[in-house]
Length: 233
Length: 233
DNA sequence: TTTAATCATTTTGAATGCATAATGCAATCT
DNA sequence: AGATTGCATTATGCATTCAAAATGATTAAA
Image (cartoon, rainbow over all chains, first blue to last red; front, top):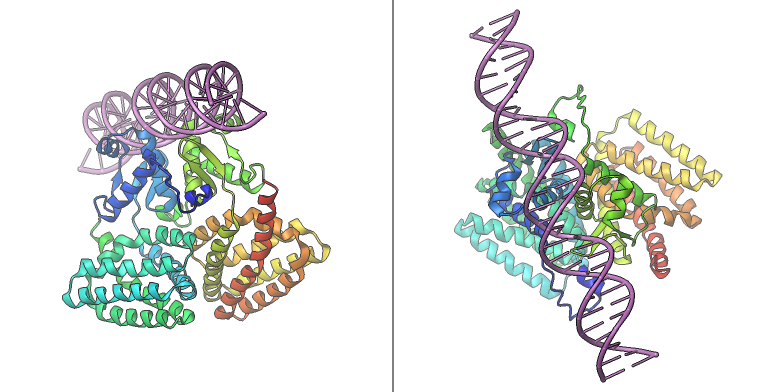
């Protein structure tokens, strides 16, 4: 977007050194995804400052941003925690994310080229391979990739951004939920249908499929979160 | 949401003095809505600091948050601007907001009590009154109120929050677009249908109505933004 | 033994100060 | 005259410092 504003289409070589707080937002986000910062744990400013070798100012700015994204919970004078999702949060988040995925499906059907669809199909086969091999982490990774790709094909950067922000809140739980292999076969079948709808440019059907596909995951995610809370993590 | 997390349902009297940066986020947001900070204008830190009588630290934290909401645009080492919407931004935002409104309609039909619906109906009549009187600011205010109320009836605080954040980005332009009285009559008719769908708890129809109702506004908003840009504002 | 109160310690909130990048203007050169 | 370079000014990024709130432990009291 910045580059677009500059208007040098094609030749933008915007040498943009990110500021500390931007980089921190990135890094901390990743730490949460990788569970190096577990949900529910406290995040003392000092610790992270020493870890990154920086002062409190940029760190605090980063925490404010992460809090506005919902990844961090701030309580005035009491510090920061990695947001602990409740089952209620999941109930609230899934319909929203589902609606956005549905929208992405409709838009993708309008915008995607045949080459785009071929690419998604390739990813689909790759995922099927991981599925048969029982390689769960890779299956999950490619799965995310497919949904992300459809999001991109929608050609709506703002949608992508909003989606990414919301999806990030449950990404960790989603990953853990996937560990329960129970739904794998069913999910694979759903993915077949999703691919078909995209290939035939049936936007309405694709939207509905993406929506229900996601809602089917909800209970598994909720179960994981309940277990985590019960364990006091 | 904070209060919910504390879990003192009913007796939350959380005497929570907001921190400076939180208050600043609020105040600056309002300034943007009221056009006291016009879109596209520069926001020098010093000026606002003196205006509010505070130091740069909390102000900078507030700007970071507003930037992550999309209301402010930050460029490293170059300062802050009130985000200038482009017609492309509008094209991207409207489908998203439409999808969220549609979702709110479906959920509202499930959750709303008869009393809730009666309340919306009352607001509807109030709006109709302003419409016949040609009182545009009041019409706009009640209009927003109705959509906001349906959002609330969905019973999904997270949805409300995401919606509010996105809607805030175009709120100013939406208000200006409403000045063009052209679509008033049509919009009123659409609102009649919306009310009917809600009253009969027809979630699917309501969702579709809200979506198209919003998309109908898009062109008016885009026109306003193009004019603003042309004038160099 | 349990509860309450006090105080030292820790941690956060906000202000200040310093280093660096960006901006605007004047002087210089073509 | 127009363009370019160099410098002074200004504004931003980050570190440091000071103040206030929260935490935890210890002691005193019921």
